[in-house]
Amino acid sequence: MNYSLISGEVRDLRITKGYQDLSPIANAQSGLATAGMVATALESSTSATILACSRNSAETSMDFFTCRINGNLLAGNFYKVSFNEGEKMEFAVTGADDVYKVHGACSPEKNLIWTLPYHTRGSIAQRSSDIIRSVVISLCGSLGFVILMAWKFDLSEMGGEVYFNEIIISFVILLILNILVRRHFYEFSYEADKIFEAFGFSDPENVNLPKSHRSADIDYAKKTGSRRSQSVPWQFRYRSAVIEV
Image 1 (cartoon, rainbow, N blue to C red):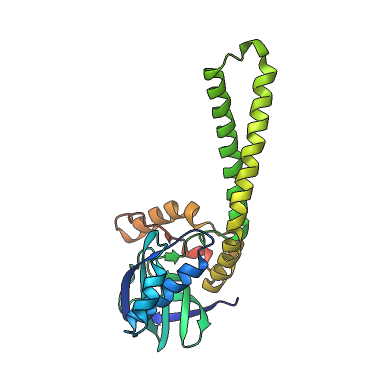
Image 2 (tube, rainbow, N blue to C red):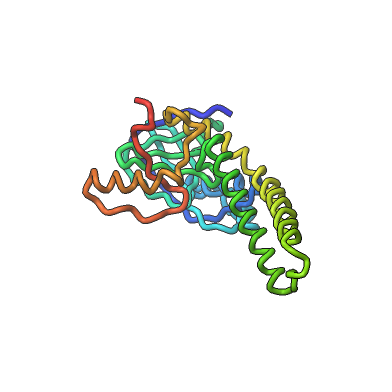
């Protein structure tokens, strides 16, 4: 899938509250939800039927929106649409008939990026994060399991070898479970590579928005003399230096 960049002033911004199933296998429901919100914003007569289908398995409240950039109609959804009418924005989009589907948004003036769920890291950054998290979680889980076993049962007579074996076995099991779960999310990081590339990031595969957000937000607050922004899911501050000019 090819991503392109559309930039300009936001016009005819319309926002509708909706719901999205955020499970990785919910592509069908989220697609219907997007179609439903577009239909609502455009006052289509088919919107009621589409919305009825899209809310059957909804879990998370989202902002669905439509707007026009240089005459182009865009549609998408974020956890919170906090950009405004007339604001200069950049959108990573794919073309779909007469409506461009938004996969990410960027405010160069505010150094803010809005992402879809699971599209917060490039593929290399995601892999590194998953490896570290999997090892740490598995190690903590295995140690917790052994502590619980030692508390419930008297293992002192069996010696330290029993503790060691229990730690190794539980660590391996937890590590395998972590790998099996996390592998379903790699497709999103490969999509994020293309989205970050469309925005002009110099090294899209290594972009890690959750990791860099705090320091970038502190730098932005010092630079502008403003207060630090409140944490909003899937909305991140970035350093402009990491984007090519």
